[in-house]
Amino acid sequence: MLEKEIKILDINIDEVCKKIEKLWGTRTFDGIIHDVYYDFPNDGKKHKMEGNKRMFRVRKKWETHLYTIKNKRKDVEEVENVVAKDEHEMEITDVDSFTEVLERYGMIKTREKIKYRISYQLAWAEFDIDKYDDIPAILEIEEDSDKSIEFWVRRLELDAYEQLLGWSRKLFKHYGVPYLHL
Figure 1 (cartoon, rainbow, N blue to C red):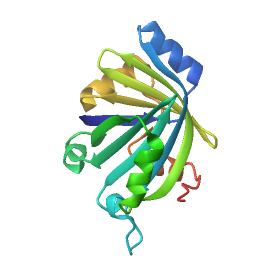
Figure 2: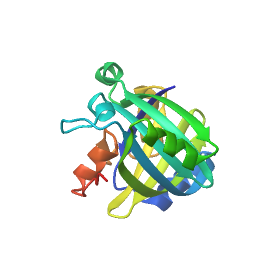
Figure 3: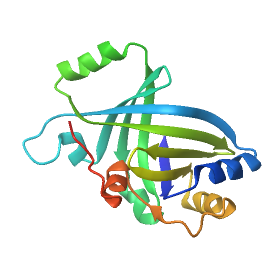
Figure 4: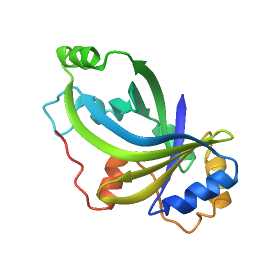
């Protein structure tokens, strides 16, 4: 699946939730998300997958565990003003065995983060409101095109808010918060 998104910074969670719900958005998640990232070690500064604009993550969302592989799509980003990634996600039934296999085949934990998330579905759009400990709340809007994302930004009256294109590493850097590697 091709994922296209932007981040709206420093939002008021209650106001944004009310606006989405007024448009008949359905709340699909409300809770803690725990992410652990894995990569193959490399002699250089970056790990192998990270250096090739790829990401491998194991996520706990409620009692569900998922693994996700993402591949950044610069070709799409150059045409549309969004972050674009090919994404593959699958549920894991035995997370301990799964991560043991990853480590047995040479992957290592590279970083970890925990956030509070509220998610909504509205038409074809996905809205994720994320709150980290040291960063103001953000809204991530995911849709199939930059025009659709722009439509939701206007519809939610968020035009004046600062937008950020990038993964969480760029978000942490923007706020001067260390993005810790393990």
